[in-house]
Length: 270
Image (cartoon, rainbow, N blue to C red; front, side):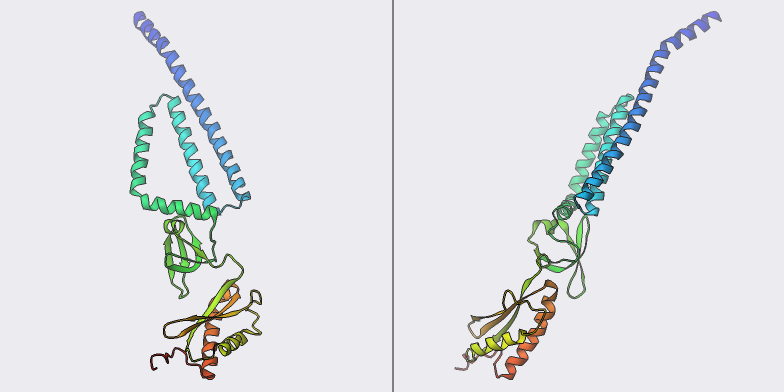
């Protein structure tokens, strides 16, 4: 009996340093985890305040903070696991391979995501602007991480991938406070161009929506069968469509009333 007690006591004495050492590692790992978690939260909050002070878009700000927080916390968990003796090499390799496979599978989506980040970061346009890119045009309704939503002039909703917007030419007609609007008509070679210029310019007089500077102008461009007449004037971006429609109708009525042959080709009859 005494021999068994002595043998058990000897085994306990052999295990005790190992157990105490392992308990010490666990306690140290818990302390590192708690301190690291607190520091990561403090860092992400400080980054959030810095981004807000830099006027970074809230959507981009929240996403970047989430990515940074998850990345740092993943590193913290891996470090804590290695402190308690858990092998993390194979785990990291598996995560890397999985990330590579997911990245290749979602290549198009990642390109749209990267495009969304660039749009939100450099802000070539914002919600409410009117843009034209790749054959799609309309008012920007929202800028999401993977796509931008437009509303066309006919009230259609257009979803444009951010990758296409970031890699193509984007025309933002709302970025400046004034743009050039043009009304185009066709008159005959036998018509009086000086009279047409005077009549078209007279239509714009007294309209507060038409800017005085730069001054409105009328241009004439010879065509094989007709003369193309362009009435150009400057206005606010939001007024382009209604003013072009208004003065297109007014110009047609005024010129026809004075006997101008709109779209007539007298050369063909000669």
